[in-house]
Length: 206
Image (cartoon, rainbow, N blue to C red; front, top):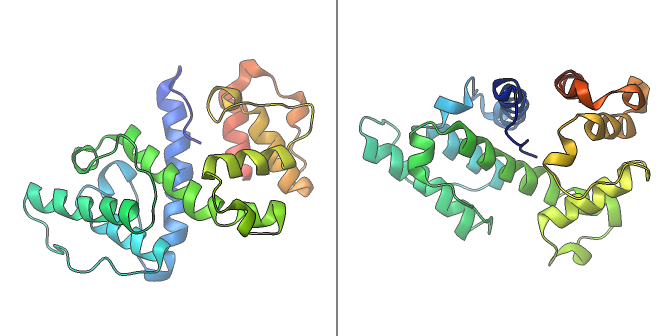
């Protein structure tokens, strides 16, 4: 869930970037590829292609492995994005090859979140919550995630979105506590005014 921009923006963006980087590296580990900076590591399209191949379990075919010119970057990135849309049926909104090549971190984080939503949530959460994949075939990933979260979070913690409702870190702490109660996350005593501290604590425990 890509958090809304707010003060101090740099802190929030860093939390997202670190968390998403860990997820990407977890997926790339089997092929010995590592990402150190999401803002720059996808700009040639090479690591993005490898990530998409790992996630989909399919080859994207031929592409420029030695990138010298900008048009090669754009072609590589475009190959990955088109594969996601046309073959994996993932809706890519407001993200194009130039945004990634130009190191637009906000849109890159949005792309990674889309991948997390599809590959780590859409394909697993529905089974966990309903015990059936057929029931969720025509349900959007966001709806699946919302259903799963409502089943995990305490009933006294309602939420309606994946942005502002999560900004104070309390819902995130409650979710971590629900999934791993042995960690003893004391989210009930967290204050909305300490949003950054709460979010960082929950992320570190997740």
